[in-house]
Amino acid sequence: MNLKNKIAFSLIIALTLGLAGCQSAYYKTMESFGYHKRDILVSNVEKARESQEEASEQFKSALDKFSALTGFHGGDLQETYERLNDEYENSEAAALEVRKRIDAVEEVGYDLFDEWNAELDQYTSRKLRNESRVKLSKTKSKFKRLLSAMRKAEKKIDPVLNVFRDQVLYLKHNLNAQAIASLKSELNTLEADIGRLIKEMQRSIDEADAFIKELKKN
Image 1 (cartoon, rainbow, N blue to C red):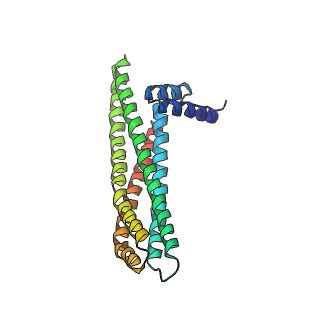
Image 2: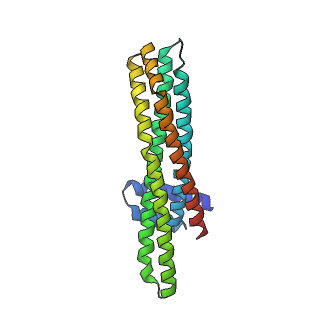
């Protein structure tokens, strides 16, 4: 069984164990295939970064559709509503994925640092123990900075989704010119909110890249 298949197999086992709520068993299963907490953390950070990149693209797409709909000059309003609702649902799904990935990063990260800290007492060499302690402190500090950037970006999501949700609901029950006018009135707010969201997500993505590079280097 090659490494890729081993990891895939271990992930299936880990998922089953995870559903049973046994995180320690999950780690043991992954470690039996040579996939340690540090590796899991790198993988989770990469997935979180990817989810933010995808979410950024989705929110850009949603803004484009939203903006286009404000220029509505006739046609099927029901179809207009359905297009906007699709964008809202896709954006909501992207946001959920981002939150899930950040939670996974946080959990494994702190589990890694707890393990690292506990293992300091196992050193017989004071020099190596001190070096490891310093490295732990620096890595944990960078991790906290990464997590802070991710959470900051995450907080920018809800204002965008709230505007989308309000407009989709209003359009659903008011398929008329007044509803389109409402879309126009919120366009500037939405553009500003999405702009801030994408900016924070890019900062988070940059932090993720730097953290992954640092973790792989050590």
